[in-house]
Length: 265
Image 1: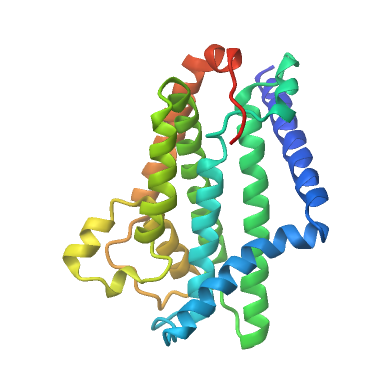
Image 2: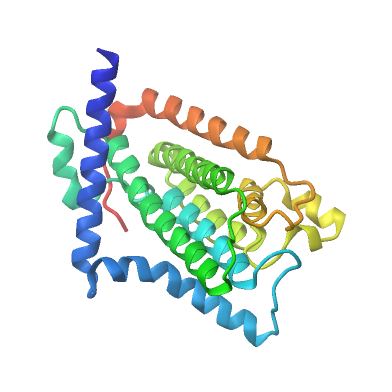
């Protein structure tokens, strides 16, 4: 009975994720290729800026892979973590009239789409660079995938928590957007390696779980890349802790969330 119940939830989440992806493809002038091209355009923009300042990469890490992995993981985290803050959109609110559909299903479905898009882009980047360099650029792909999923899980936990708490305390939504869009942007290692930071600065930034995720991901792709102070255990604690807290908060506030859903900004 429990497996049947869980399977129905998974089917609902998958169906909404498929609906969300199809809508994005239809809204993009060049369809699915345009959806995949958006993350690459961001990476290309950052790479162009860094090249203007003479960026030649980090010891033990390909320059494009360094920036690409940082950007992909950060924007995955940002899109997933901020995805629920607008509540349920007007076009999706009618789905909540169905008995089996809950607000969290829509949040999870939207997060699943982001994971599908950014994981596909990351795979294309690694495989493409491997062909260009004529050497494999993923030394431990299994561990890299696990870190990628833990980053997405942490973002999802933060998203659901901000969704629930922000429904009761609207200023939390503004604060979450500020922290994720601004503070994490400059402290997550998109443009720098933690190994090159002074010890006192590095110890201050190690509170950020996304920094651990990005640095671990780079290390598992190319093991010569140094990661002093970076811990997979810390990232795992954030993943399971944020997911556990978010599900607990949601379970105790689901009725209130169903009563009143704001439109997306």
